[in-house]
Length: 266
Ligand SMILES: NC(=O)c1ccc[n+]([C@@H]2O[C@H](COP(=O)([O-])OP(=O)(O)OC[C@H]3O[C@@H](n4cnc5c(N)ncnc54)[C@H](O)[C@@H]3O)[C@@H](O)[C@H]2O)c1
Image (cartoon, rainbow, N blue to C red; front, side, top):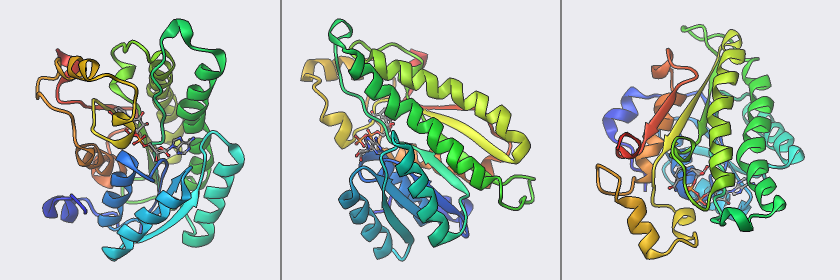
């Protein structure tokens, strides 16, 4: 099940670290959780679907990793306070936050209702703000490591922050917001020893991406501008998450890592 290469596993060691991954019940979030666990982190698998979280925890435990499942809707402050509380009760600290949960319902702009726009912004942008704030307060309590740092936040944006996508005005706005917020948080949290970085994935084959209302023709058109001529695999994004979560990326903060098969250079 785990796709982490053995050399990477040896090099990127997260033993003793505690990581929270949002939207980890399926898709890329699941693979981020599995990957961080394989690198030795204790992982809090959170999602709106507790059942899916529990399945991921079982997968991690089968590989002798340590993890707990916590239901958390990142658009709700009460759920966020709860996931932080449960993490501290179980693992006593937080070192890593991976803000991954996101929704991308295709809707033509002229038909998009105010509530549609608000829903996407509430999950994709406000949720990242709330999770980052709640976790940063805890990460800031960790002792300094050899690099003078205390922990890392990894935000999952999208190439939708860099190029436009018809039918996704709300999503593009939210992902652009994540990228901009990453820079602001990186500045404010650097003095506290917390690094904040952003990953912009291109088209990745996940349950969420295949469940959209995109037609086969739209999908072909989407893949046409990708120089590497294929969709990404979730593990290819998780490898970037692992690097940014680990101390091996200790001189990176406020950066944008584009993992898109070359899409945006075309
Ligand atoms: N798949 C792609 O092509 C692609 C490309 C660029 C960026 N992304 C981003 O990557 C992230 C993961 O996408 P994916 O393709 O794996 O999606 P997915 O739909 O397969 O998985 C998303 C997970 O997030 C959970 N979720 C939804 N709303 C939530 C909420 N309010 N609180 C907590 N969890 C919630 C879902 O239950 C699901 O388990 C998203 O932020 C997405 O925008 C995806």
